[in-house]
Length: 101
Image 1 (cartoon, one colour):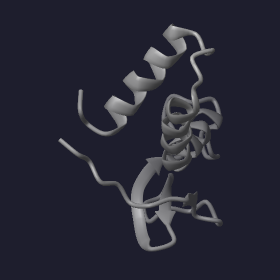
Image 2 (cartoon, helix red, strand yellow):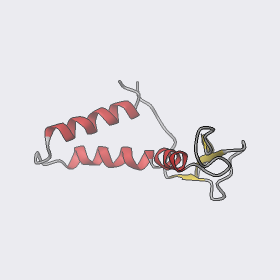
Image 3 (spheres, one colour):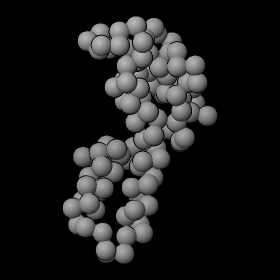
Image 4 (tube, helix red, strand yellow):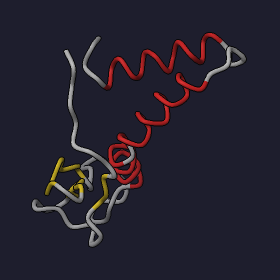
C-alpha cells in the first residue's frame, strides 16, 4: 500500500488552542487541520495548563513529514559506512510511516 500524506511542513496552531478545549490542532499550509492532539491530560500534574508530554507529542506529530524525508534521504546518501542496525531502523520507520508494514 502506498500511503500519500499531506505535504509538509506541518505546524501547530500558533495560539495553541484547538477546536476542542484542551487540544491543539496540527495543520499544513495547503490543508486545514490534519489532527487534533490532546493538550491537557487528566492524570497530569499540570491540570488546567498544557502538558509537557502532550506538547512533545504534538511537536513530534508536526515534525513527521520532515522526519520521513530525512530518513529517506539517509538511505539514498548512505555510502555503506553507517551501521547496519541504524539503516534497518530507518527502513523499518519508513515502512511504518508509509503503512507498508
